Image 1 (tube, rainbow, N blue to C red):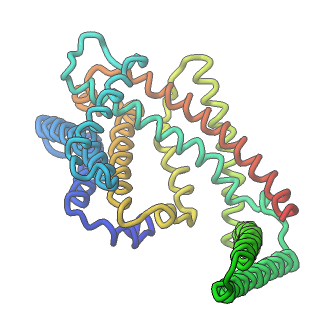
Image 2 (cartoon, rainbow, N blue to C red; image 1 turned 135 degrees about the horizontal axis):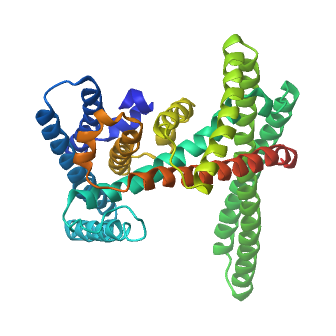
Image 3 (tube, helix red, strand yellow; image 1 turned 135 degrees about the vertical axis):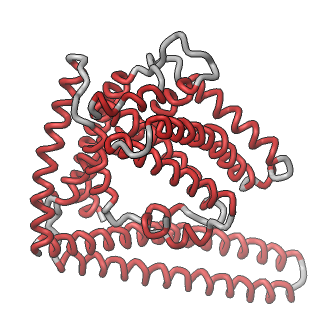
Length: 404
């Protein structure tokens, strides 16, 4: 887990044994589902044995995703709230019941089941998990399909020179000097106020008291104004520092794009740009003509996802802590399990008929075509939204640099 997500701190902070067990079980049974698909194609084990393991695997993964992981997420969230720690078990149960209510209501607006299925059937659970998982998969695939060429192609890089970086670093140093000088003024003013207070305490009489009060008020007003200036300069210094780091990273990317490997990734960027346009076009065609693509969208989504996750972005370092690490790992387990269950639903369409019989029998009479159409809809929305977001971010970057 540490090597996969490049976050040693997060793994070190996860000391709860139950969190480690839940994540390991989710990961193990998620991978087992893909092994069972391979066994179906290769004919490994007897059909009755494969059917038994399919049933066992699905029941365990659904039990973990619907009952175990949501309960412990609520438990650790409540444990981090000081006012609720004494009754954390009760509030964790309330959180779980709230999750179950919305989880069950999720299936009402979607045509995912045959009316003859009972409330406690396995199809009721798989269908709802599939909706959430396919949605997450399509969102990630849509963003990755757009972000991958934007990241790899040198065409989108800003032109950054050493003089730009030096000018920004000079401004940063000047701002830091101003902060230091103003903080010195604050310290000197407080010292003078303290000394004046001692002198005024030695004076007696009515006028001495009045003079002491007026001088103290004037000094406090000056300190307040200087402190406001310091706060504004510190905020500016943070923005300048982040902009300096961004320019340094952009300059490194420009130098990297001139290498052989950088040119290779630049070529991949053009390739994925073509793929992105083609996938958006095909998703639109599938939606307009209400058809289901015969090519597995999961394979394409995984390709884009892998390329996207290859970006050096330590998300967990930014948000993880000793209190939140357990919740983060459990949320990852939840997403991972739903992703794998949804992958099985979508991969069934691309499997030959002679290999999908047991998979279809185990999953039940679900509306499999709905999940493919839903994937295309969410992918299209995610891709178009990502294009708009990256366009605005790319357009505002030079304006932000000029403003600073």
